[in-house]
Length: 224
Ligand code: C5P
Image (cartoon, rainbow, N blue to C red):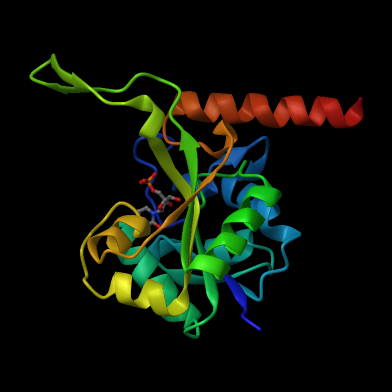
């Protein structure tokens, strides 16, 4: 029986968020963003979760996770952090590893489950959001062309892989913005699992305002 393990990347500096603290520690309705993201994984009962923290904040992050994960120092880039996190997890060849951005707290538990199941079956699968906008390629401020929207997906997380596939993908050392692209480099098929737009990545101050509104709306609906 394969084990399911999680890696939550939370070592980003949060410069674009502009709060003067790491993004994962920024308070969303009074709780660190990382705590909300761990909530999304809570009912999945993964065998183990490792969180990558900014190297100078490991002790602080160890407090933030409230015993729900182990915390290791991340690296300079997301890709470096993923390598360090996977090293700490030490997955077996047939374990399924879910890599997830701390900056995506609203991914639904059922969506995470669907990605894990797909990766268990096929070896590699990612959460992806169907593109709603018409996407233009531009250069020098002018449109070069319009891409065919019906074929486009915004790559989100979790991205889940059999341990053996993730190890092969990471071995190249290429500094990619996601793990799926490392599989693509090797011609390894990666399944796309559609998720809702709530899988968005909190990046800018505006994203954080939207996140606050989502949390408030959920709070109100819980109270009826
Ligand atoms: O910078 P970006 O928003 O693309 O980061 C995506 C995720 O990767 C975030 O959750 C961030 O904390 C994490 N990250 C990391 N180590 C880095 C940079 C980003 O774990 N050096």
